[in-house]
Image (cartoon, rainbow, N blue to C red; front, top):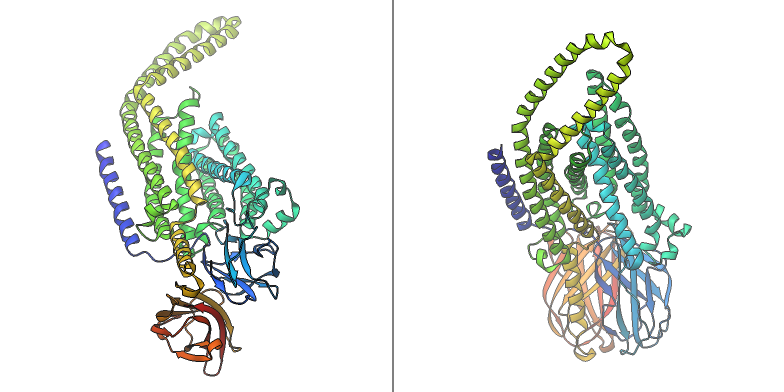
Amino acid sequence: MTRTIAPRLRTLVLLLLTVTGALLAGAAPASAHAALTGSDPAQGVVVDKAPTQVSLTFSEKVAMNDDSLQVLDPKGKNVEVGAPLNPGGTTYAVKLKGNLPKGTYTVAYQVVSEDSHPVSGAYTFSIGAPSQTVVSGVGTAAGGGVVGGLYAVGRYVSYAGFIVLAGGAAFVLACWQRGSGVRAVQRLVVGGWLALTAATLWLLLLRGSYTSSGKFGDVFDLNLLGQVLQTKSGAALVSRLLLLAAAALFIAVLFGAYNRREEPTEKRDLTFGLAVGGVVVAAGLAASWAMAEHASTGLQPGIAMPVDVLHLLAVAAWLGGLTALLVALYRAPAETPVDSAAVHRFSRVAFGSVVVLVATGTYQSWRQLGSWSAFTETRYGQLLLVKIGLVALLVGIAWISRRWTGRLLETAGARTAEKARREKEQVGSAAGKTSGRKTASGDGARAAQLARQRAAVDAARQKRLRDADPNRFGLRRSVLAEAGVAVVLLAVTTWLTQTEPGRTELDAKASTSSSSSSSSSSPANSSGALTLDMPFDTGGTDGKGLVRIDLDPARVGGNEMHVYVQRPNGRAFDVPEVKVAFTLEAKKLGPLPVTPDHVTTGHWSASGVQIPMAGDWKIAVTVRTSDIDQATVSKNAQIG
């Protein structure tokens, strides 16, 4: 048997390397964990006159409340008016008070991305000239503090509970049906259900404070709880609780009616029914994570969500079954020991789970990283490398376990023959003594007591022999090592689900670097990329959208200009015509027309756009969505 395992492992490793290389070589953008990709006014800029609003553009749509976007003056007082608005796409804006004085203003935001994680930050811009500011403590990391730590613990316990619940039940049905009557296995599966239920309720209570104030005192705020129930994450947690009610019924049948069935046909039919029902409930529970986290947003969510469900089910079948096997090896009573055939069946289930994990994990890695460099340049990539190393270690230990399993199977036949011989001798001896017992009916109670004592002694002897078996002892040690690595692996996986994906982190770094470079120079000689977002409405059918202007390096002389047009849902909008004009009203210069070339869907560009002098330029964009429907929108920006 060991000769057939090594080729399988080599094939599995080659498959992992080949698929990973192919996917990462052709990586495309994906989204998860919203990142700030643009702002108006930009970070660190000095504008000549006060803006009427502040707008932020994220890498994906976000959820906001009335306090999600704040603008503070140099004295720390709020100057925004009303709640944040969504003029189109992934841009969000808040109106400002009029006649704002000169000085440095702070923009702070705290939002919830589509993958359920809170995102926060802050930056500054100045009106007229920079100044001192008393603002502090804004833009702290969302989801941190005591509440963040408790939320992370809840997530870990919920994952562990699901793995033990689903994997333990699968081990009983698929590998060791006698285990349905073993008290230790029953306690394990029920414990998984209790852990998942308690953790889900705990996360539901923590969710409001976790995504807003971060204060533990707000955990039991009913208003926050009501807001959570209206979100995608709240709906996922509630659906998980409903599915756990179905899981409770499944457990009751598995350890009740199923365990008492003796007739083979009835037990086979009930096994099939429990298997179908168990897969449906387990898939539903796994979907409660997929529908609200990384898989639900970004690139190919229709593929990513089923893949995520398969990934979680494979993890549960492998690690949950491993936990159940460990309990069975150490805690199963002598009269119902876990046999080598059950261990061998689980070995095959585990191997299939590893194949599924490699395939689904490779796809998820491509989706969240998008490039080889993200492995080393982002926290997500570094954690993923640790996870890959732990999985490789786990597979190596599992290979050792399979070797011990093979040795158990080789000796199982000899033990079975010896046991049959002894039972035959015992039956013959009992038959010879039966007549003597019949003549002494008064000794019946004594004989029954002696029989029970002999049975107990025989069970203890069998347990000693089983524990002394070096093959079984080796299997116990290797499975225990697997379980230890699995605990660490689960912790790293939980940490990964709360970490900003590598691709988004790199995009955010690039955006921040671009914004910083655009404002690092003095007002008289500033340079750097300039990004402006302007919503438009031509008034006709399908006439709303957002136009984005990127000007690089936004200084006197030649510039590279890119124009992007998006629909309100963020998708590229291929309109018939886009025109741009630059006007320096203070010098009565312009308008200087620019007609960019169409590059691809929703994207136009122009090279060598000449800006003759520095100043506060008005950038007007005319967008035509049909033969007769067009609109012109404009914004002012400091160039040069």
